[in-house]
Length: 242
Length: 229
Image (tube, rainbow over all chains, first blue to last red; front, top):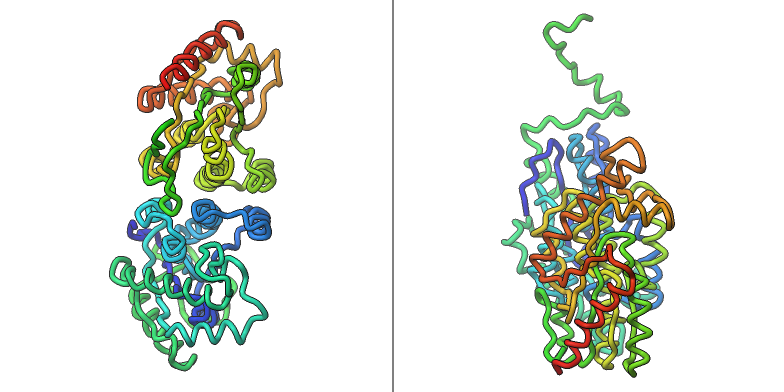
């Protein structure tokens, strides 16, 4: 992956379902906003352009591992071309709940070639910070089973035919995904967060990593965060008339 | 096609051993008469007792409504368009083309991934990237390239369906009007097809000839292919 040499910062969270990453990135987002930062948040699989196709394919169980991978890449590329990349160029902090690594973990677990799927996303830039939430499988599964009414077909990896039982299939599929994530820790320089720690403690860790990453970085002023701007007295540029 | 061959890794989770059918592709830019020839070939093959299935870009039932809606808007970026088309192509390949070939059908494909590549390269895409993405594509038994030139295309458009936004490449404006943009864009596309033709070994057919003469050329090559078995 190419280095991010845009003005903006790209921070992503990764991990299996139930690892707590969405809770953490939401808190991170609120914290950065309260500091007057210009933040843009993007979520996996959320492009309006692709939505109806994804829904159709899921309802009809029409995906193969390759078309699943390609359609999610289409979704990502739509968000990339219209939001993530221009926001980075403009100098915003882009927070992404899941990034290309989700595809690398899930699609390879489904049987697509690891090099092929990495090539597919080669237009995406290496984030400044990848926060990977490592959590014991039992904890993640328990969180998902207690929090949601029903695990969905593809979420459970039922298309892999690992088991006719949804919960069993889900566990087996998630384990495969964990194995793929673990292979990427060094490959993509993941910062590992212990997802079994209390929420507040994790958030403290996250903020310290982010703070460290933003040292010496100016970023884009947020015109709507007026109270913050008043605190920082911007020096007048020489030659500028007042 | 006795032993199936892919341009890259194919579908690793679904290895294919033998495909007794034949995959025949007609390539070329807009308005060169591909669909007319496919219709003729289908009748001819069926008359001779061969089962035929045909397919073409954007015909996947999975992606068709979404892709058509995306085309009617103006927010679809170059990468996104390429990947959406790749999804359409992969779906038809896995769920339509390969099953038909397994069953021993002749599959007539109105364009293949080469067209998506040509269009994408004209829009500034990286050829290397596109080659890698289409590593899942099956190598066809025959690829006919219906070659033409811009003046012939223009005359076909005038006497046919007229000029439209996408066929004129208006999303990458090189001129301030539809006609000039069409000529410019189609000229660039033809250049790309010529390059792809060399790289992938297309069989070039002069499509400025009459429909029947083109059809004769295609038939001759297909007869050779059938005899080979």
